Length: 273
Image 1 (cartoon, helix red, strand yellow):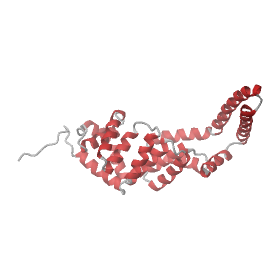
Image 2 (tube, rainbow, N blue to C red; image 1 turned 45 degrees about the vertical axis):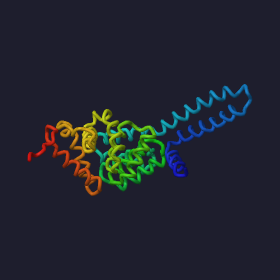
Image 3 (tube, rainbow, N blue to C red; image 1 turned 30 degrees about the vertical axis):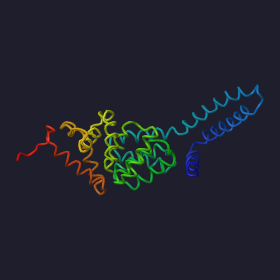
């Protein structure tokens, strides 16, 4: 709690003076309106309640205005990340963090960016900070789960990814949780999660490929088609290179070798006696 208070105080101190004063006035009037609404004369309670609602909206507007620069920079970093320009995303997000203007979303994106660059130590530190700020939000919890996976720390990865699902994370997390449980050897749980994920990853060839491949390894599906291998494999080859020094990178290298050994027609040839 102290860390969270310190974070928001630091953010507030970086606002412009007019935003600081406006926010303080709005909060002060809001507290006064709430007191009147709760214990004031009956004829003033309804107007005070209406006034309090208006002051909440006013405070939100001031908050968004004061953070307008951070929102624009975060959006730019997000575009760089989606374009796989991780160095540019990192530069923007590090500046946000160093200036005290990064919220949990910006910290999560920075942690994810560090992971994509193979900087797992930095990724873990920043993502744990993001989780501290928003422990029940699936975005940072999912991020730290993926970083644990990249390390090869599968029990921690599975725990974080399961928690992200419980906290309302997107259906695509079924894939990541399924991969973690597969690498832990939790066969039934992995099959359940990966089968649930398949309908939601069809527009993401890399996830569709790995989900199909893992299910085939578990005896719960056919090997991936040649076209899917062609579309999805480059992503996993890059991941294998980035995390080549970790147990996860080693496991991916073996998966890639297995996938490349699948005949183009998907049929495993059984040698004749």
